[in-house]
Amino acid sequence: MTLAPAYHERRIPLTGDALSTAAALSETSADAYVLYENRGAVGWAEGEHGRIVVHADRTTLAVAGDEPVVFPADEGVLQALDKALAAVRVQGWRAYGWAAFELSYPLHGLPATPGDAPLAHLAVPAREVRLEEGGALLRTLDPDDLDALEQRVRSAAALGGAVGSTERVAADVESHDADAYRASVAAAVDEIRAGHLTKVILSRAVPVMVPIDMPATYLEGRRGNDPARSFLLRLGGWETAGFSPEIVARVSGHDHLVTAQPLAGTRALEGDPDGDRGRRAELYRDEKEVFEHAVSVRLVAEELERVCTRDSVTVDDFMSIKERGSVQHLASQLSGSLAPGRTAWEAVGALFPAVTASGIPKAEGCDLIRRTENGPRGLYSGAVLTVDADGTVDAALVLRSVYRHEGRTWLRAGAGIVAHSRPERELEETREKLRSVSRFLVPATVAETGQRSAISAPAEQSVSALAR
Image (cartoon, rainbow, N blue to C red; front, side):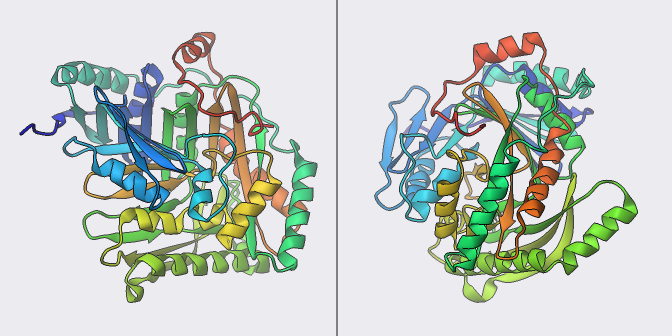
C-alpha cells in the first residue's frame, strides 16, 4: 500500500509583521501564489502540486506527475468539485483559490457565458506558510524545500513591509462611465417597479492605466482598510489584491456550523467624527438602505434553511454598523447547523453568489446583470477561498479589489438597486467604495513590470470588455 504524501513541517519564531512578510514573499515569488488573511491569521501558498479547475460541465484535477482526472458535472458543478477535492491524495491539505461570479450561472439555471472560461480555480500548494504574530508554520511537500523556504520567510520578515514608494496611481473613479451607469440604474429601477425582481447590484469598471505593484498595493490598502478578509493572488491567469468587507460563507469542518455575513446599506467614512456620525445615523433613517438590508437578511435566512437544520438558523447580529476603510455598512450575521446528509459545498452553493453582490431573486438578478453589464465580471463579486481536508470552507466575497487579467488592470464597484434607488446616489456609492482601493495604488517600477511580463500565467479567457 502506498501512503499518501504529507507535508513536512517546521515551526519558527518570527518577529516581523505577518502581513508584510507574506506580501514580501509574494513580491519575490516567480510562481503561482495566494495570500489569504482572516483577521490577522495569514495563509500563504505557492506552487500548484494539485490544480483543480472548474467548468460548467466538468472539473479537472491535475496532480504533479499524474494524468489529469476529469469529473463530469452530471450531478451539479459543485458536486463535481467536491469529488475532485475528495480525490486529492495529500494528507492534511489546504487548497487556495478563487471562484468567478459566472459560477452563479449553472447554480441558478442560467446559460453559460460563451467560450470555456474556468468558473473556479483552486491549488493544493507545493509550499505553504501559515503566519501569526510571533511565529510561522512552514509546510512543504519536498523536504529539501524546507531550508530554502525558511530562509525566504526570514528574509521577507526582515524587509519590514517597506513599500519603497509614496507615489500613487490615479484612477478616474469620479466620472468614468458615469452617464452609462446612471442610465443602467434608472432602467433597473423600472424593471424592479414592474415587479420583475426586488433588488439587483449593478457595477461599473474603472480602468487603471499605469502599471501597479500588486503586493505593495495590497500592503498599503490593507493598512488603510479593516476588512473581514483580505487576499492577494496570482493564480489561473488572474492577479488581484482585495479587502473583502464580508464573507460569502464559512462552513466549519469541526462542528458543521454555516455562517453568512450580509452587508447592505452604505455611507462614506471620511475620518471626520461629526460627519461620520451623521452619515451613520442617516443609514438607519434611510428607507431605501434599511429596506435593502432587511430583504437581503431575509433571503440569506431562507438560503440557510435549505441546507441547515431549520430550527438552528439564527440571526446572530442584526443591522449593526461595520466600518470598512472609506465606507460604513449596515451589517448582519446569520448562522445555522448543516443538516445531516448535506455537504459544505451545498451550503456554499445555496449562498453563492452573495446576495449583497447579485440580486433578489438571485436568478433574475444575475440575468439582469449579464444583460446590463458589458462583459463577464470574472472575479468581481465571486469569491477567494480556502478549503481544508476536514471540510472547512472559508469564502471571502471579492469586492474592494484591484484586478489584472490579460494585460489589463481595473477597479470595480457596484451598488444595490431597489425601487427607491436614485441614480445619482447609487453612482456616488460606487465612488465611495472605489476610493477604498484607489487611494492605495502603488506604481510598479520598470524592473517589476518586466518581471511580471516574464512570469505571468497564461491567459484563460478574453475579458477585454471587463475594464472598459
